Length: 640
Image 1 (cartoon, rainbow, N blue to C red):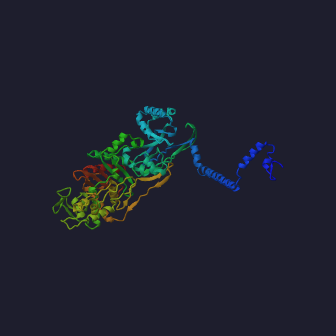
Image 2 (tube, rainbow, N blue to C red):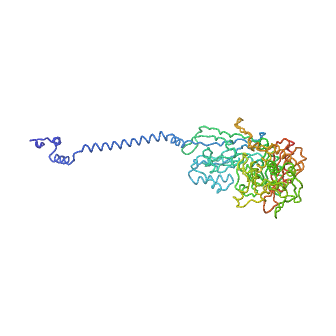
Image 3 (cartoon, rainbow, N blue to C red):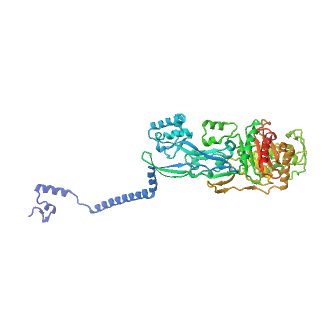
C-alpha cells in the first residue's frame, strides 16, 4: 500500500511531496490542515464591496476634475495668470465744463501722485521703513506722517493706492530717478481738476475729490477705482455720470519676484463727456464782483445772488458768499485748510442760493397782491389808509413807518412796501370792511407758487423752505395760531422760509406773465468729438393758473417800485427795471438785525433777466441789495 494513500483515497498534496523527508512532509501536512476552508459567498461579497469603493472613489475624482476644469477652470486659469500678469488702471480725464460762450470753467491738469503697489513691496519690514525714510526726506515730510498713511493701505489690493496726492514736479523727478531703490512705491501722473476763476464758480460748479471708502461701497457696481476722483458738490456731483470717463488699462508681465518683464499692451482711457452750461460767464463775473463789493459796504460777508432767463428758466448766473478755492479740494487740501473751512463761522461751503432758507420779508408782497386781487379781497382801485399802526384790543401792530404812508392802493402799497396795507389784505383790519385772506388761504397761495417745495434746479442739496399754517404750528409747537401770526405771514415774516432761487423763480413767473418755469443750469452734453449726446429743453412747472390782467397790474406796481418807490435809485439806468425790495427780520432778540433783499427783472416791457440779491444781516434792501443790482443792470444794458 502506498504510504501516501489513506483508505484508498489519494492525498494529492502529499503526493506532490513524495520526495520530501517524512518529517518535512508531516510538518507541511499539519500546516495545510490547520487552514479553514474558504467561504465562496464571503469572498464574492468582499470583492463587491472593494469594487464599489473603487468605483465610488473614481467617480469622486471624475466629478472633482470636471468641477476644477469645467466649472472653475476659467477662474483658476485667471488666478494662475494673475501670478505673472498685472493690470494697472489709468485714470480717465473728466469732461470739460464750459459756459454758454464755450469759455472753459473746469478742465484737467496733470498731477503727480506717490502711490503704493502692494504686491511689489519687499517682505522685509526694515526695507519698507528704509524706503519710507528716503521718501520722507525727498518730500520734506515727517517719517511718522508717511507711516500713518502707509499703514492705511490694503495689502491685498493690487491696484495703486495713493499716499501723497500733491507731489511737485521736481520732487516727482527725484522719486522717479530712485524708482529701483523704492520697491513698491511709484510716481503716477494722473489728471486732476483745474478750475478757472475758482472762487467765482465754487458753489455753482462744485469740486471733485478722492473717492472715499464709503463712496466706493455705495457705488460698488459702477466700476470706480480705489484712487478715483468723484464729484463732491455742485455741477460736478449733479452730473457725475456724464463727466466721469472710462479708465484705461495697462497690462504687463512680471516674474516671480514681481519685476517687470514685458508689456502686453495698453487700452487708452476714454475722457468723460463735456458739459455746456447756460451760465453767462461775464455776467457771473460782474455779479460776483458786485456782490463782494456790496458785502464790503456792510458788516456781513454772507450773501447770495441768482439770475435767470424768466422765459425759459435758464440760470444765467449763481453766486454764494463767502466763497472758497475749489482747487484746494481737487488738487489736495491740507488738514489745516480743511479745519479752517469747516470751522469758519460764515460757513463758506454752504451754497446759500439753493440751500440757505430765509424769511423773505416784503419781497413776497407782489405775490400777496396777486392773491388778494384774485380772491376779490381788494381791487386795483381799493384804498387802504396806512396810518402806521393797526390796533386790535390791547395789541398794536406797527408798520415800518410809524407815522404812516397815507392812502395806499395796490400800486403804491407794493412800490412803497406798505405793511399796513398787507396786514389788512392778509388778516383784516377793524378800520375797514376788509376781512382779509386768513392764514390758510395765505398758505394756499404761497404753495401755488411752489414755496415749500424744491424748484428742481439741477444742483444738489436744494432746500424745501417752509410754509407754515395753523395746523403746522399746533403740531410742531403745540401752540395756537394768533392774528399777529397772520399779519407777519402776510409780509413775509414769522416762520415763512424760502431760498433765493425760489424767490427769483417767483419774480420770473411775474415777469413772463404767469408761467412757472423750472430753473436749470445745464444746456447740453457733448462727447470728446463734439457730438451732441443730450440737450436740455425748458420745462413748464405750472401755467394758466393766474389771470393775465392781474399779473399785468402787479408788473406795473413793481415797475413803480423803481420809478417812485423803494428802489428809485435804479430809475436813472439806461434799462427799465421792475422790482421789489425786502427787509426781513430774523432775530427775535434784536429787531435791528435784518436781511437785505432785492428781487427784480428787466427790461420791464420785455423781460430777459430776473435777478435776486440777498445780503444776510445786511440791513435794508434798498441800501444793501439795490446797489449790487444797479451795477449788474448797468453792465447788462451796455453789454447784453
